[in-house]
Amino acid sequence: MNRIVIIGAGSLVFSSRLTADILTYPALQETHFALVDIDEERLAYAQRICRRIFTEGGYEKATVSSHIDRTEALKGADAVIISILVGGYEAIESEINIPAAYGIDQCIGDTLTPGGIMRCLRTLPVLLEIMEDIRKISPRAIVLNYTNPMGMLTKGLNEAYPEITQVGLCHSVQGTSEEWAKRLELDIKDVSYLCAGINHQAWFLSFSHYREDLLPRIRELAERPEIWHGDSARMEYVKHFGYPVTESSGHVSEYSAWFRKNSDTVKRYCNDTYSEWNGRSGFIKDLYRREDWKETMEKMASWEEPVDLNRSNEYGAQIIHAYLTGTDTLVYANVPNRGYISNLPDGDIVEVPCHVDSNGVFPLHVGPLPPHLAAINRMQLSVQELAVKAVQTSDAELVFQAMALDPLTAMSCTLDEIRQMTGELMKAHEAWIPGMGGSLPQEKPLLHTTEAVGEVERHTDPSVMNMKE
Image (cartoon, rainbow, N blue to C red; front, top):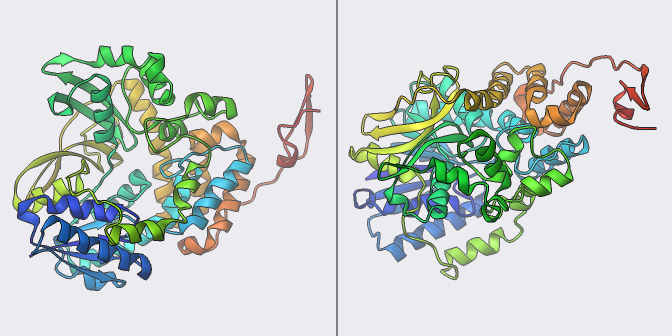
């Protein structure tokens, strides 16, 4: 019997989605699912929902167990799926609200920006502990990480445990390709494409229908008002840079200095009606402030709400099926760059097509990205590298440096303000980042001089910065 471990199984729908996907493969229907979560109440719901899937789908040979202790669950594991949140709503609220007080407008904040950096600080140490347990208990298992910030975490895990077969996974390539096929009034099954870049900012370098190049049509569609409105930031990428980018307008609006300058630009460019990831300020807080989670899970467990048993477009089940049965497949995954994208740095995490079979995961060579697209990706990769090194070295100065190089933060704040904000964030997260030892970025003198510049008095004291008299 195959043994698949899901760490973070108490999520509202994600673990049930992957369970249902895996069981759609006949070769995987004799599988034991070992569910792991630190929240016993959520874990109990997850187990009930899992059993409902077995019954409703007629999967008589599938079994399930639940575990607070992951080491027990990992014994004999063939595959491990990880999707966790460290710090819960309290941590998310502080990493959105504190930067907002400095004028930094985040929507999701789970990939880059102050929110993504703080997520890395509190999540990577926990994932490293999980990987150490996997190394000791089930080193031959394939590890699929769905936890954000994907690029930062995948980099940290691969640098620490290169011997473990592992990938970082997302659904943005599939989702974006299906959106464009729909706009082009085509069946996605008849479309061929090549996508490459980094997670949440990968580029469709080709998009074709039976040898017909569809990029010219995509560029024309991107400027149509009925498409531009409601997905504006993504369409701006196509309009100005020529290539579709993955993820929603809400997400991509956070990764540059172009879109979230003020309330007017947020309203114009960041309102995403094509996706649940609406671009409004602080949307992530609404997403995680789910006071109805218990009611929702109860309805799923007691058959009051439907559970979709059809296979979704998530790559997790495809990878596990290929790895355990030898039936090869092609997916898009996040892996360390080893020349796959030749004009992005080696060792940084790239999202590229990968061949998967029983021998493992084999990324495919893409070559160079168009230079301007590679330059946009590199702005993110520098921040990712600094955030990971901050965890590896427990150096608070590196946290500040990552914040200072973040495009959205740099657009909104001076260096003095960024240093002060970083200290506030680290104090607020002290309970979840014990590896930093309570350290804060080194204080710097706040020079208190005033220089008359036309009608504006520019102050170097952060308490009076940006004020006009």
